[in-house]
Image 1 (cartoon, rainbow, N blue to C red):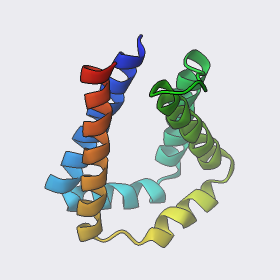
Image 2 (cartoon, rainbow, N blue to C red):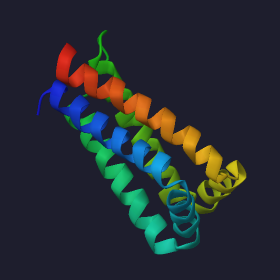
Image 3 (cartoon, rainbow, N blue to C red):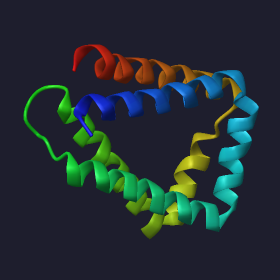
Length: 128
């Protein structure tokens, strides 16, 4: 998998989740609340986030300048987030709940995720 492919996949994932948050903010708000209340889903989420982050870091550990560093940073953030969910699940839930996400805030987060997705996809499809 090339750097371009990774940017394309990450971009499309962020874009589609962001658009989903813009179109269905209530669904995403309720999904996050239910995820925080379900230990099994939280546990599985921690495992998946850690695995995805680990794969990015293990197979794409680039600290040289340029766009590929973004992939490595996203991987390390995912590794740390996954470990936090696995080792300190109560703390993770406390952080998410402290955000007190309202439906209109979901729209803002959806817009940010969509813009990030567009940028990442653009890099993957047109720059690399």
